[in-house]
Image (cartoon, rainbow, N blue to C red; front, side, top):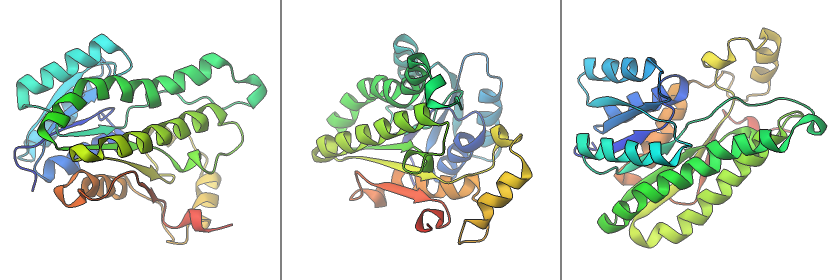
Length: 249
């Protein structure tokens, strides 16, 4: 159990982020639930975690804005203590268009979430982790990074940048007892996939050797391990959670 430790899960007001927040709370972390200002689900998720007997509070902030990131980390530290585990899950709209129609602004918007946000949060939490010689950083990337379908070039490029950042941080921060890893989900149906046609889901399922779709809990379980004390010798790794789909042709 992680009694006394504090975890921040960005983008945790719904979907995978909410499942990860609930998992870490059950593991004993005091969990900071995060979403954009005005997102009423932030407090709802935190309240549900407290109703289950765990410790959580909602903290609204745009994690691509430096001032809001600094205020976020300050508020969490005042409420719970210094952040021991940082889960980088926040994302935004993901454009789907031919490469000739994707602008630099589309690329920059993806990089804001998958590179800028981690950098801003890292600058805010890493000095404390280094001083305590303990920390866990887990990024949520995607199978799309290494198996990009047509029309997802901006997203895939930013996700690969995120993976490069993770590996670089892992090498540099290992001497401080800080691990840095990524979890790459396969297709996991959540709210934002509600409009995906059934035939697309069926085709995807047919390509998964495990014979079932992944669930948010599958992803949260992998994050829970990487956030634990038991994962102290695991760093710079990318754990693909896709039921074996990446093993196929």
